[in-house]
Length: 192
Image (tube, rainbow, N blue to C red; front, side, top):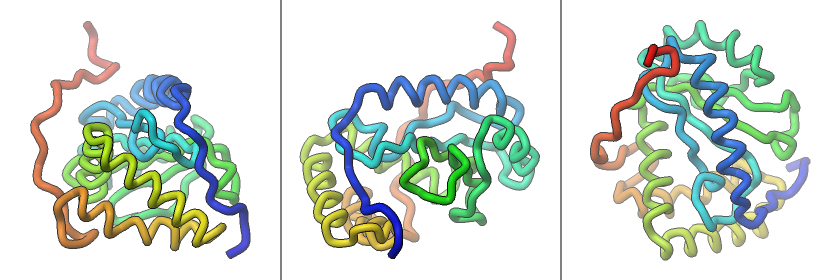
């Protein structure tokens, strides 16, 4: 596959700072559609874990069809609309480039009951809690980057078995058990 090979960068604490800056901007712009805080997901959200240096985020919306009205708002923030799991999410990335390796941010607007939301948040939380998972996952990612070069689809696909193991599910169509309730959330548009 044409492109730049998958390359992992050592964990950078600046990733959390970049997420926080983007979170504030997104929560303000998307307040009318959000039902919870924007979440930092993916490997850049796990302290100590090497990653492709792309800040992955998910924003929980009450209704995917109603959130279609947010597309214009997100693109006005410099994002480009892309296609990834369109039945579950509105997907965006920036900067506006055709090359995945030039992206700095990715965003999914999805319902918090979606399979995408439940799997990504649970996997992130498991990696944050267990050093053995982080270590195994990082080694797997390094091995897959070496094996697949620039084939991002194969790189991502071949992580499925490990993700399913961590989540305690049989395959990628299964959701992990529902986790404990999160802290109450107030929209940035709420006075207070």
